[in-house]
Image (cartoon, rainbow, N blue to C red; front, side, top):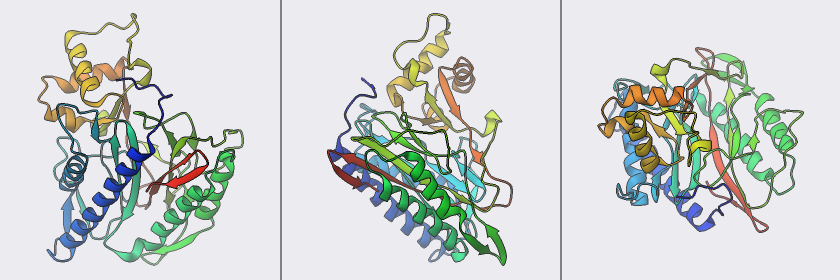
Length: 338
């Protein structure tokens, strides 16, 4: 598989992926609402929500184990509750964590065909107390999508997003919050088989950032209004990390200065075959029944062949929403895909 960033994106395949992403969202919302309302459940296990989404994507894309890079899940499902901002997905041992009726959750999942990635997210709560916070992220993301055009200074988009978010004051459970925009998580360009391209779209103004939007570029606009401090803190314990990805610089050749054991070579070959340069989860590796996969994975991380992506947290007790949409401008025409 050639994963060169210069490969042309396929607008028809992106639209196909966007349709499946939307279909999964509709089914998921019915599943969540029916479970809480009709079945009168007080909580839902996150592992069950994850598997629901994964199974829907695999069915919609006609995923095949014999050609795993042809179509399917683009990255681990993110289920980020309340003050968890991003990059949390169930690990094999995470079987008891639940979503309750009084939580807000950011649901982030991806679909791809031939490496043409749709990366979109939305916020959900059975309670209406988070409706204002969710609307702010929707408005900020929509504004970012509206401003995407070739030649536009990205910092202008960031300024508009920050202004919408930080001019907002909301009330949750009779407490008033001045909303902040998360500073260290950004929108981003998407390239073929590469979830994070070269350009970022920050959610706050970065005075020295002078990049502009180009033609034939796909972007994920994702905004994070928060009732906390506006800074995501990395969870540094390896125990809580679920997201991993092959270092894009090592997709073809491992430097001769790096020595690999037979276990490391075998696991790396499996990762390349199953996931290529797309992100993968620890749970997916576990399902492959590979001996000593976890210790071997940690060794590949230590050798910087695999990159780990810890979850981000806001201050405890705060709430964060997220809305993420994909936009592409091809040959003079803008398409908002999700």
